[in-house]
Amino acid sequence: MRIVLDTSALISAIRSQSGASAEVLRYVILGKLTLLLDYKLVSEYREVVFRPSHFARSGKTRNELEALVDLLEDIADPVFVAFKHRPLSSDADDDMVLDVAINGAADAIVTNNVRDFKPAARLFDIRVLTPRDFLIAVRKGQSGHAFK
Image 1 (cartoon, rainbow, N blue to C red):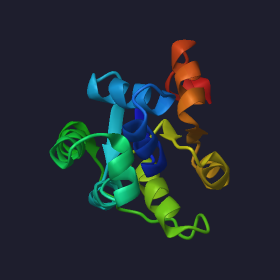
Image 2 (cartoon, rainbow, N blue to C red):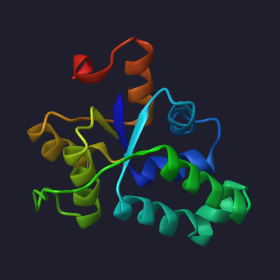
Image 3 (spheres, rainbow, N blue to C red):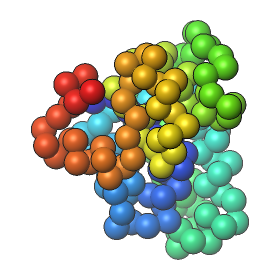
Image 4 (cartoon, one colour):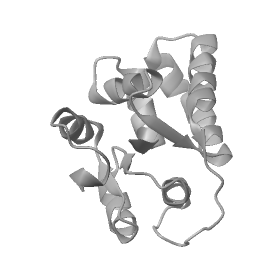
């Protein structure tokens, strides 16, 4: 299953290793999910992960967080954003995530910000789920377009 992990879900994963976001991240690292990334999104990951509030709350060293983002970049399927369907939302960062999902043929966007993504993603038949709801769908055996 091809997913885009919104930065909000990544931050949740690094701040709490026991939550749904962390479990989604583990699935990505174990190769059970295909993460889609482009240069802009991975750059946003790097910028946001190292904000003092997130960095301090993570309990991880800078090297550990750098290694995590490097790993995600290494294992992700790179997406070339050939087409930008803008504006899709009121937030340019949301449009950036949508661009990756659309151009990468994502099955889902995993985010803590479902409300802002859903209307635009629906136009492209991309599911938008919280990390918790995504895990429920995956554990029920629903995958790809079958769980839309």
